[in-house]
Image (tube, rainbow, N blue to C red; front, side, top):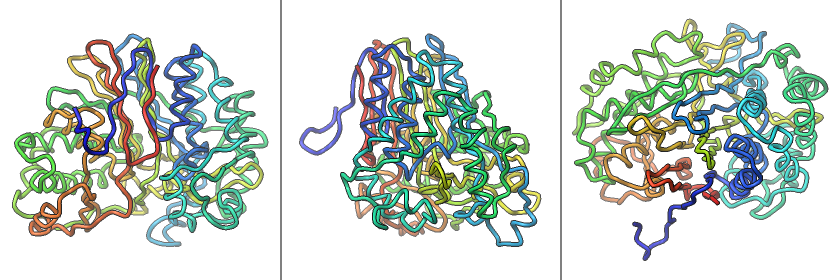
Length: 524
């Protein structure tokens, strides 16, 4: 139980259904979907699409998603890859002639948005109320507007320069980011959602919406065609698994970075994490060193699954043992996370559990804050820049290429205990997500924290030549980490956010939502 003398959040409990996400309106809408007879999939889609207007810097229909879910009454985990592919006309040699990396705020970085196709398939295959009902709340709020929340306003102000052309007119007010409480509307995107509600995926990937997107990208030098959009297709796939502390961790397979979280946990098994001070220097140091090694491995091998041959190597306990042996508990190794993939911190996560115990773990993003910064001319669809996640290193499995999916940082997760589903969860924060998953799991297993307490706890992350350390760490701990050789820095913003719903053995749902975001958990 938390200390009520200091500020904090209590877990949220309910028995019928629960949603936890990063904005209260989305949580409310998700619960209303279930109260109206819908299930967790209806609720998750409704909340996720709405988040594109509550947090437009983080996500939107021009982005990608990944989903893990369990069918009602089952413990089987189903994975859905809703990430789009590069245009068929992309050419790595031509991109190399422009620079060492793909320019993140250019049409070259725009991959085909995959989330809409995934939402349409998931609604048809698993939903109860249908796509019209699921999209209705987002259409309403896109037209009438959403008051800008505190964290959203802060993020928006930092990303003003990411926006270009027509997008500046749509997402800025008199050239500035909206202030806290100002109303943001997206009537053009509401029209797109109405077309999707009526015509399904064809309302987005064909006809005038697709023509608008293609014409807008081609005008900026993009190679995108109507065929690229018409051929976009999400895929069901099988999750990958690892274990730690008596729990089984289900992650989405590549092209997401879930294998990195499994590798990290396999490495941490070689250290007595439970015997360390949870917020002390020793644990932070071991985690930082493991992160450097795991992310180096990720950047060497992880890619589109059709081009990746070393997944077994990443998830092998033998690999983890060899890497763990390289860690010196008394000294930081030279920093560096090789690879040309772009760094970002922006995404949304939503998890829903319904009365039949269908669980949905859904993550949805446009990559950088406001993605590519490019919006389509007629309808204002904001394009992701996931193509910046490719490398231009010739022969690399993640090298940019026609029809390829880039390496993704966004990953949903699910925990099992004793073969039964225990908890869908996710940790936002771009690169941090794999380390965030590992830390969340070790917070729960090694230190016995509730999901909410595991989120409230301070975070640190070895990224590039820095060890980013949140304010929740004591100054003495930061000094000790510096003495170990870490370049300790205070991150510009708190690291990511997270949500989780625990299916307790007594049948009660217990949820937590990260105070680093504006959202909450709600149940009924």
